[in-house]
Structures are given as C-alpha cells and as structure tokens.
Length: 110
Image (cartoon, rainbow, N blue to C red):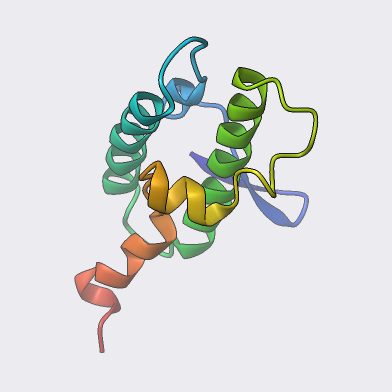
C-alpha cells in the first residue's frame, strides 16, 4: 500500500509489500520474477481510483530496493545507478513497470 506522508506518496511496508524483502543467494532473474508476481497482484488489487502517483512511488521504491540488493549481491560500493540503470532493470531483468499499467486501464482511455 502507498500512503500520503509529508507531501509525497510513500510505499508503506504492509503485508502486500513484504515479499519485496529480497533474498540473498538468489538469481536476479528469479528474484525479479517473484517481485513481478507480487507487484502485478498488488496493482490489480489496488487499481481503483487515481493510482498513477502511487504506482510511480512504488516503482521508485522497488527500483531502489532492487538496486540495493544487486549492489549487496555483487559487493559494489557505488550507488548502483550507473551499473544498474532503469533500462537494465526493466529491459534486461524484466521488472514490471506499474506506471505503464495505468495506460491500459479501460476508463483511462478517451
């Protein structure tokens, strides 16, 4: 769930997002596959109303957590932005981008 805190949408660590705790020793592709299942289920459950800002907040949170996990797994000291850019996370690893899902909502089309 995403909540409005301090003037911005903030991912809330609820049971819905607990599977985002990344496991050590797993393959990155397997980890992203599990994340995608959780994210798609979460998005389908919470897709009523204005969700675009919430989806963007969750996308940013997931990208940060995944980068942190990749840095830890490969023992990288940098922030991970140059080694693991968004394109790598979405295209190579196949991470689902929730903010793109709102484009396909039937009530969002004119």
